[in-house]
Amino acid sequence: MITIYHNPRCSKSRQTLDLIEKEGHDFVVKEYLKNPPTKDELKKIIDLLEMKPLDLVRKGEAEFKEHYKGKNLSDDEWLDAMVNHPKLIERPIVLHKHKAIIGRPPENVLALL
Image (cartoon, rainbow, N blue to C red):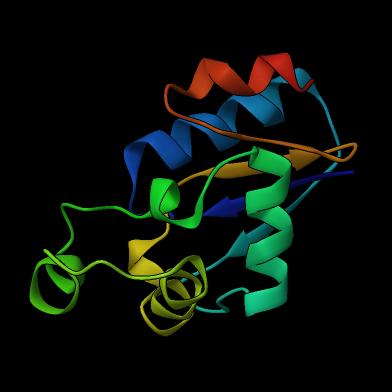
């Protein structure tokens, strides 16, 4: 089963979801702004992405500029930041068979399918 952490207001997220639908795979949509991932879920996603928490942070968001720009936080503190401000989480994230990828560009997800 494919899981997509999705923001319907994001064009890249919508394009990625359309691509998954066109490929005919079963999937679950998690609108992470409405139901943010827990810290443990976020840790698992980051492990699957094989990156550091800071690499998953959207640095152009107002929340980042207001609260975090210029700060040197630990991995654990960045996880807390994303849990508290889910807009900071890069999108879309697609999980499939113990692997994960960020759908930027949307065609990246084809490697998982």
